[in-house]
Image (cartoon, rainbow, N blue to C red; front, side, top):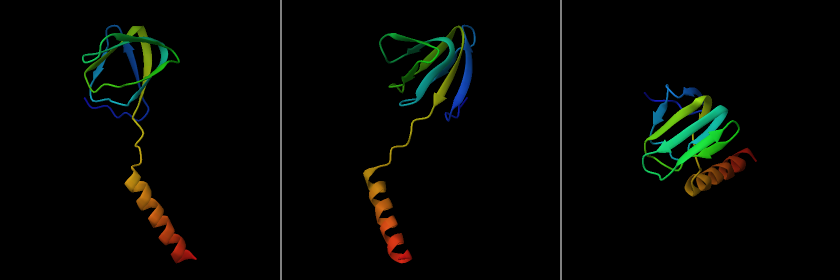
Length: 101
C-alpha cells in the first residue's frame, strides 16, 4: 500500500504495526501514546512518546508498533529549492519587474 505522506495520521498498536520504506527525510511524530521504531539498516531501536518526533535518516524497511497503542503523524520532506531554480526565479522576477515598470 502507498501512503500519502502529507500530514498522514495513523493509529498503531502492538498487533496492528505499520511498515514502510523509502522514507528518508520524512518527519515522524508521536501524537499520542508511545511507539517503538526499528529499521533494518540501522543499529538500535527508537522509542518515542507523545510530543516527540524523529527525522528519518534511512531508506530501509521501518517497523512501527504502538506500546500498547499510539497515534503517529508522518510528514513528507520539504522540497529544497535548488540553486538553479532560485536563480531562474530571480531572473523571472527581474523580467516581470521590467515589463510592469
